[in-house]
Image 1 (cartoon, rainbow, N blue to C red):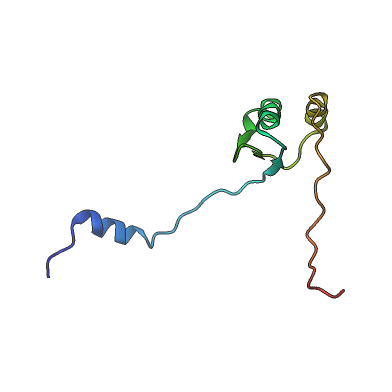
Image 2 (image 1 turned 45 degrees about the vertical axis):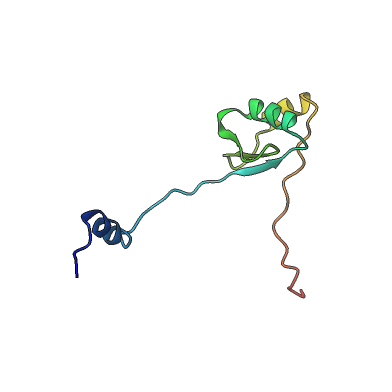
Length: 92
């Protein structure tokens, strides 16, 4: 049987090595159209990235009142964040 090429041996041996990664908080903001998404993204700044043409990721735990006010001046109104998830299968 022929020996495996060195690159294959390295990749196979690297699969079992532990890795670490960071985890942060983000808010998903859904807007009605692309133009609104661009306006919101401009206001929220570099912490805000588009995921689709109408879905934005804002890397923060909350949207500060000052930013909410700036967005509302543009005629866009952020709804209140949703409450905790409800287990609809729980009879209590």
